[in-house]
Amino acid sequence: MMGKGKALSFGMEIVSALPGFSCRRCASCCKGKVVVLTDQDISRLKPHAKKEFFVRTSKLEKILTGAEHKILMVDGHCVFLNGNFCTVYEYRPDTCRRHPFLVTDRYILVAKECPGIDWGRTQKTDYYKELSKSIAHNIEEILDRNH
Image (cartoon, rainbow, N blue to C red; front, side, top):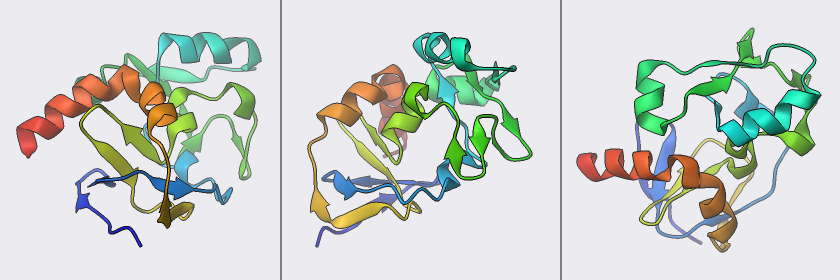
């Protein structure tokens, strides 16, 4: 069994290998989170949004991620969440596509509370590294300064 790594203050931990994953459809990743948006995410979502769906990131969120915008949260959950169902799943942002992982050239981060993580197996990082590239540089700089 793969061991867990170093815990970080923002709900992620650094690990040496990417664990397996099977979504449990609990939608906890859609509640109380910052879901940053790239310009590509906004373009992909815009034709499918029936209402406003994004807001500007805070100064700190922009420093951490480099993103100008994030998903609008309504009553603590994503504006696109209906029950535990994502109404724009096919068009969801890269942040959602890569959850519960963030993979850079030097780090593998895992959302430690996600119930879909399978610590008993590993997988390749390529898919998640591609989805993480928009914020990877900012995250690496912050982690490098603090480790």
